[in-house]
Each structure stands twice: as C-alpha cells, then as structure tokens.
Length: 558
Image 1: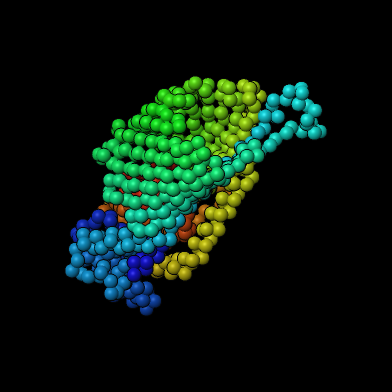
Image 2: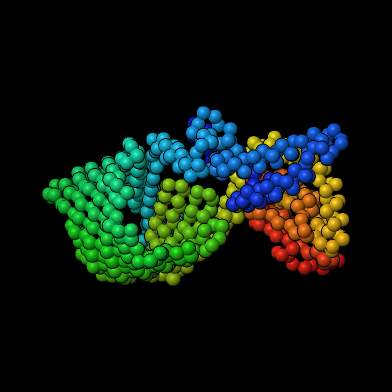
C-alpha cells in the first residue's frame, strides 16, 4: 500500500495555493480566505447557466480545500502524502482518531519498511578504470632516440592499466556483503585480486567487518575492520590483517582516531604498523566554498609534509579549482587543477603535476555516476616549461571546444526531451487547469470592476498589467520563446484594502492561474499603480510577494 504513495505519484493540487494562505496558516486565516472565495464563486450570484456551472465547479474546489485544511487529521495526511493520501481506503492513515503526530510516526514507519524493500534490490556498484600513458617522447627527444621514431611521429604507449569493481549486496537491514575485485598490468606484467567482506552494523555507534582476499601477486589475505563512535564528536577506526605469501606471514595494523574540532573541521591521527610503518596527523577543513588539508607523516620510507587547498565556485556547474604542495624524502611535488560538472551525473577534472625528480604529468579524471575513469599521462622526466605550458593550456582548450560543440548541445537536447515528455504526460491536466483558470477569470469580472472602482476612489492599488510564466531576458537565450499568460484580472481580484499579499506557494495554484510552461522556471511580473504612481515588480514562482511594500518606481511614460 505504501508504494501507492511514492513521491512521483503524489497529486500536485496545492490547496494552500488555491486559498492563497501560508502552510502554517491558522484556522482564522483559513476561514477568512474561504469566505472571500465563496463570495466570489458562489453559484447563486450568476444567472447565466454556463457561468453558474463553472462557478459551482470552482466553488466545490474551494470547499474541498477548506474541508481538508480545516480538519487537523486530514491536514496532517495532506501535508505528508498529498491529495492522493486522502483517497486511500483500508489503511492506517485514514483513521480519524489518530493525532497528527501519530500519523507522522506511521508515515516514518512505512518509509522505513519501503527502504528495507529497496535494500534488497540495491547493489551500489562502484568501479574504477585507470589507464597510464607514457608520452615522454613528445618532449624528451634525445638524439639517440631519433632512429627509433617512425616518420618523425613520437612514440606514445600505454604502460599500465588497472580495472577495479565492487558491488554491495544487503543481506538484512544490518548485514551487507561486499564483493570486489581488480586486475592490473604494468609493462607486460599483470595480476589480479578478489575480496569478499561481510559488514555488520552492531549498533547506532559502530560496525564491524571481516574480509577475505586472494590474488596471484600477494597471496591470501585475512583482515578485520572495526568502526566505533566514542563520543558525538570523536570516532576511531581500526584495521588489522594477515597477508600470506611465499615469504611468510606479514601482519599489519592501522588505527585512525578522528575528532570534530568545530562544525567544518576534522582532525585525524593515524598509526600504521607493518610493511610500511608510519605515523600521520592531518587537519581537514571543509566549508561551502573551500576545502583545506594540512598533513604531516613520519614513516619508512615515506616522510613528508603536505598542504592542499580547493576553492568551490557557487555556480550551476559546481566548478572547483585546487592546488597542493607535497615535500618529503622522495622530493617535492606541486599540483594544480580544476574540475567541473558537465552533465547531471558526470564530472570531469584535470590536474597538472610538477615534481622533482618525477617530472611533469597530466592527470585527467572523469566521474560518471559511481564509475571513475582515470588517465595519468607522463609527459617528461625533466622540468620543461613547454611541457608545463601544454599540460595547462591543452586540456583547457580541448574542454572549451568539447563544451561548445558537444556537451552544451547534448544537454540542451536532453533537457528539451525531458520537458517534452513532462508536457505530454501532463497535457490533459494542464488543459483542465487552463479551463478552470479561464472560467475563474470570467467569474471574477464583476468583482474586479467593483474592486477597481473602490481602489480608484481612494487612490489605492490598481493592477495595470500582470504576466506569469517564463520570461526570456538573457541575450544568449533569444532563440527561446517566452511563455506567459495574462493574470491581470486574478491579481486585481486578490487586492484587499490597497494591498496584495501572495504566500510562498507556487503561484500556478492561485485562482485564475495555471502553469503555461511545465517544468520550466517561472516568474510573476506586475505593473501597477499606487497613489497615482506607476511601479513594477518581478517575483519568483514560490517567492512571497507583498505589494506595495516590495516595489520600485519607474517612469510613467514607459
């Protein structure tokens, strides 16, 4: 029964918007809005048979909205499930004796049950494909190598490749099996491993995991991992393992202690004992606009200091630029790069790595949903300015060309297809809403005439013109067509005591309104006169609006 009320199926009729009240409206506010609309739509006020029939339809809609919102139990059901939740029979939520709090508890229980069913079907696959490319011939062209070049074409080869994949199989709400495997090759030598882990959530504070592995490079593996919240601000993770090989058994232990230093900052202490013993401490600060990491490690053979910083632009494409410096016994490496979202599920990034004695490398990464594609390209073993220049400029030029020629047209076409499907699926409903809006406008004419006369006598609020829908003001979108409807009459009808107040609900649900562009961003533009002076205001679809308070004066000749 719960599946009948999935989010995608909830009816979009908005009773709050129809009555033009806040979602937190009191009984007095509901009653005042209901009486006002009843006076407007009462069938007895119209003699024409067609107008009388239309008024009766709208009157019944208003009455239905008031009946639901004035009943605390029905209102609680509507707030959670929408209109369709009120039509379900033989289910707990229709028990009128239940309080709103009990209904919400029932809803949460059903959500948990639905989530448990979804767990049985979810595998959460994750994968990584890494392809290492040796392109040193592009820049390291020593004289003795010229004889090996065919026709003067530099020799570029793939010298390493790694493929890894993992899936999760929920066994119960607390137990999960994780199967993972990897294949790798480097300069003609390859190998693979396969691992099976069983994870159990022991309590709200922790979980444990047992891992079994096998491979032709390292031999069998037996490991265990434990996570535990010590306090609300501190947790510890311990991992131990036994690696079996022809050289014997190699034990290893890794412990990480982490603590929240403040709302956005974490501190980590790590101790590792085994093949590569080390101690590491790091501080990570992550905010809405930046990400900073400071780390120091003492160990064999890796001892280093590292600092990295990432700046997050607050744009639609979630652009990020980053830079890092890492210095230790192995040398010094400086990295800088950027990443950007190119579609709903895809993120592309490029990083330039400059190091001594590592040389210059370009790392390209593409994330597609839960799959990662990584292409490290080694350009030169030396610090050549030409290699740094091409590694920086080349990906940028390539990205801009692909973005302009392929990505943007593709995303635009996808968006248009989705909007077209949405329009087709809701065409009949929109046609019905349009008829209701047109009927409401006809019924409002007499009331609007009286309101205008009253407002003119007191130099009050007169709506000269009002449009609702999609406006095209950006020069780059001139090819798009504006999709708006005239809502001058419905807005004037809502004027009371020289004031117009709209709540934060979608304006498409207001009397006399409908959605002229399903799935697209909408606004309300109003040109009005108040105390003899013309004003104009632009409001978003779900923005609350108060006139004349939110306004700006324009020239009366405009």
